[in-house]
Image (cartoon, rainbow, N blue to C red):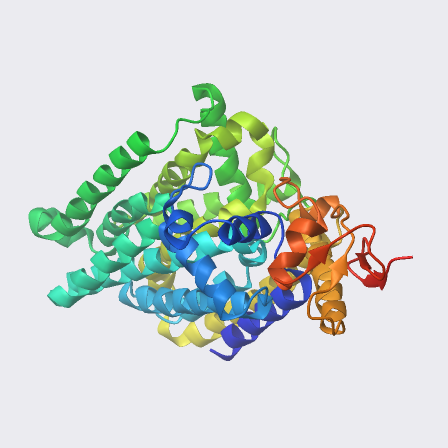
Length: 460
């Protein structure tokens, strides 16, 4: 618990000092200022229809406008909730002492920082990940206790997840697979009794998909061969990132073939698979099923317009792999419960746990270095977030020093890294987010000017 708390504290520190609102974040906030509440909440954003995401955006801005610490606090509530539910789920999966190590490893992975650093992206996915693990846990708890309250909570989590991210349609599938692997014998003997909750939820997923396809405008689709190739690439990059051997724009993963690091990951998976075969009891299927679940989970983005636009470079954006990491942690927990823990004699378990804890600390150190290296690599996403933080912190500090009730500025373009998508191209669109009474007049005297580093000076 102490180690997990330390890792979470580091994550908070990193987000507060090396990230800020940028790009899509600013675009959503500008749109919010020029539309009514319901229009903002109910309107789709590109290919996404996520009304609860828009509600959360509206709430965070109106609680404390442009205060990134408040935005991070909201994200961390969901993230800490994910860690708690993940630990509880691993306990139900009988992972034993390994559950603490898995939770710490999950929290220490650099994919967490990559997923949380871009706020608009994280605000959609962090609640989804929390609600995914929540639904899985309560389904597992229902399988054990039979208490109907667990199913009601799982149903609420599923419905709420649909309001944040369309990928929530896969939650019933996650519930079914994790539930089956947790107690295969019961599923074989009481199939109808065990599968009806996720199958009922799956009907809700089907209804959501039909409504989504009907109401949202059609967008581009990747060709089938490209989609299949991209699906495999997503899984390849995820495994490299989750192992701590890959990081965006630095220790990157090659598009074609294997690298030394990827060969190491493949060797580790083969060793785990061989160990599973040796242990027997049907445990050989855990890793193949994990790979199939990951391939199925990446399928929506593999066939999307994102792949049609960006091709096989897209899987190398590590922020897309955050939303799969909790599934990897759960499968590792199942593997430890059925294979690793059963292989360790009781007299050596403390020694093995100490070795595992040392490995987790080393893993945390490697991922910390990876995040810092990526942040220093020009044009990586973490570099963009870091420079956005520097610009907006300078802007906040200097705006706080201006005493005018309605300060006058001259308009100027924003740095390219702050507005990649062009909806917030200049200070005339940005500054009203911080100071609603700001006025713009390039000929006024005196007037202020925002420099390219975010500092403010009197225009000459």
